[in-house]
View 1 (cartoon, rainbow, N blue to C red):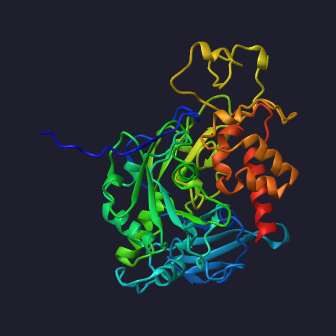
View 2 (cartoon, one colour):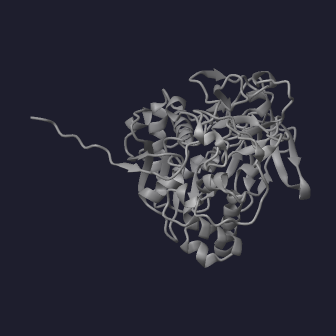
View 3 (cartoon, rainbow, N blue to C red):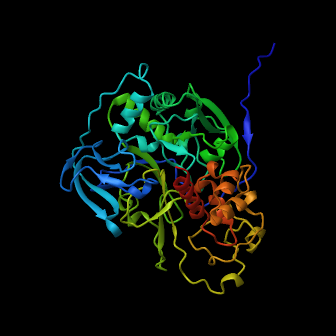
Length: 459
């Protein structure tokens, strides 16, 4: 007699594109020493208008609230380290650009009385996450904004892998954190009456396969298979009037660690990647760490041409450009450094460009493709007339029409935006469309413009 086993159903995605770049992080983990300063950047949080709770020069602990959201005062943003509030940097119209904390040599933490999870309900769990500053990790779809704690989602979705270029290996990041992860998913289950869905990469077994109490779904295919928005679309699409919440898988472990220990520990592991990094690796850092500490000049490749570099908090498709004296983004799991690409190229398009990457046959590199490429931030041309090619459809594995959605956004047509799937996407889902766009349109900015219009008109 033979035993039968139920093979997991695999959702196979064919549309998309894997961009293979030089500079993948090696399986090597190092600890970043405590840095002099850490910061919270309000622009990392969509739609948040910060109101300060602490004055410059006051002492804070890790977990002390620094500011709250004007429109949702219950949402607190807490200091990642203990020390002194060094400064509040403001821009035009006194807009808060960053809140900087000077770290103390000896770290102290706020104390929290956490409920027994078995007896706790949604309100009690939400209150604990809000008070300790972990609530901003919970995002809402549609719109990709911080979730409203007073609502209840139909389900919660977590993507267990990242398919973006040079993305960190989540199994490596989460190795040895089984207890934190399991506790984190138990916490998420308290926040919804529906299911907690976990998207996993097909054909690879890791720490997340051992998690219990979640609905597991397996995906195969190129990027953006790892995007939680794509996974939601294929598991349980969002209809008008419905809400789902999403949480990053490393954030799930951080929430679980908080409920296990009662300590607001904001440390995490990031991947240091990119062709200009001399030794790509993994680093354990505290959220809000300075970019100059994560990647000092001596860890960069040095050349004789004096070429400028682009520092990115995140991946090359969706990350935010930062200055060397900037800070790690709140939701970033990697830092990438690539050439700026601002140098004049002799003869430009007249050259065969055998070492350049192209999704079309614009360069002769398609005759002799490389395994990995060094790409820069040069757009190779400026914005031009909108070319209608049907190209976007090849790179978005969702049953929506991206070209028509973008046109509806540009026209400000709310009804068409609803009918064409605005509730299902945020910027990262159409990042590949921007990458391959021959018209050089800033599609991610257009999508955010449409989302902001929906929030303004319908809420």
